Length: 177
Image (cartoon, rainbow, N blue to C red; front, side):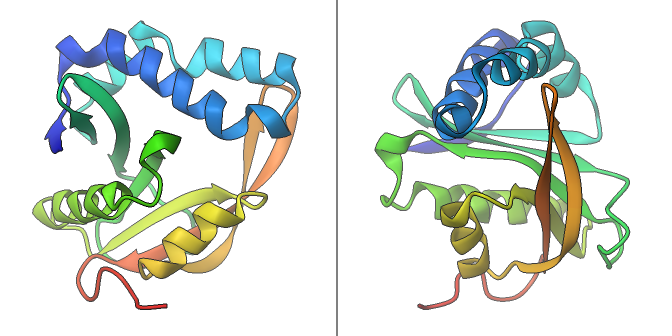
């Protein structure tokens, strides 16, 4: 298992894998047309290439051999108003293939995200997580994130609510249950 930074050559693969992972995570709980509209915009090769070229973004790929089994996209810059700390970094996307759930990959990817944030001089990492995704919320809480508010997320025509969660970059990575 390796975790590496993605580059321009990964754009096509990231568009495909990103769409697959997003759909596997959320399709059962959303209208198919809303899902189609969102995927058609968020996971084009051109959009992935632009995100990979953005100096304020970092994309980390988790791979097993030649297979991409997860990824995270971080964005340095503007933060939700309730996020405190100097130079906050947002984890915009954090997805692991279901076959890898419970095998430690998500914890390793989270550690890599925090390491990348630390390298950028961030004091705080934050993210938005769908309020109807209790498994993800528990994962983030287990890794030191706390709920500080909410924000809207548009999936096609459906306006949804994400919980905004934050944690300091330093400190304990994983709390014991």
